Image (tube, rainbow, N blue to C red; front, side, top):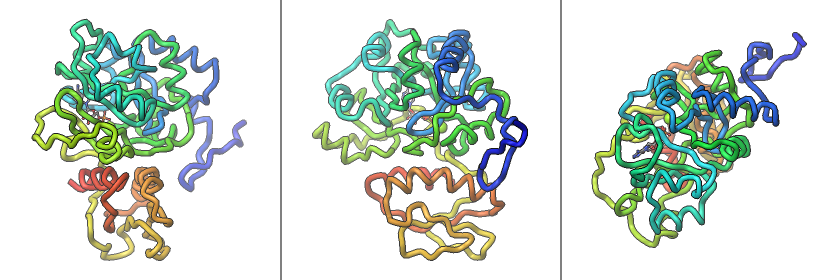
Length: 328
Ligand code: AMP
Ligand code: MG
């Protein structure tokens, strides 16, 4: 039906342009499983952000992910599993892992563990490190796929390296257009920012904050985090990352209405250039809105983004982390 339109970011765009976006059903799952078996790459929803998924055991698939994303090869990928049973062969578990797994999985948390010497994970996916980052996603689409597959999925966010992570199928389309044969639409990612990454290979250490806060993890592990500087090569730790492609200035008010202002809480008025992460002052909601709002600001033609102070506890730690990297 050529008169069927999709409502997207205040623009009506013809639906037929999106012929590589599929809704979730048995048929597309079967097609995607076969496609992944042949070392092809697909765009998939998760509860954190959308990902670019490929067979973690296939060098061919991993090479495709790096080249699609234009991601530096030294930045390792997170490997996604259905459950811990399926990861046994690839990593060495420890007590801290099981404590956190029991409490938070499946969910938005990634564990860095020692790589098992019998692991089949492509060494390209781990950037030849002797560690592996693993996650157990919760979203129904990826869980269904992982259940049917005999290999785990390497999956970074579905965006060109150093940009904003996509939080819906249309964001993924904007990044890769028809370069992906399959993008599965699983609705908007509920969490909206990337997983918390915790290194459990030694004394626990948070490598990247996320919606699960350091405090929640500390309460489960009953230990403080290592303050030691680590020299793990990891993308979430690269200085410039999560960039909307225009300058981001933190802790200042905009100078004029051509500059967007990201604010948080009810004390801010409504204005054409004001974008409120959460009017009711809910940090979880703010995290879920962060990338959506940054994409919208860019799309609306603003040349700069100013950001008011965001509280720095709970999910606020992750929001401030992303904003500060976006400002580099
Ligand atoms: P991203 O793919 O952008 O979501 O980021 C992946 C994150 O996982 C990085 O921030 C790293 O902290 C971490 N990571 C992935 N693989 C490894 C690994 N083999 N060793 C240590 N950290 C890793
Ligand atoms: Mg990313």
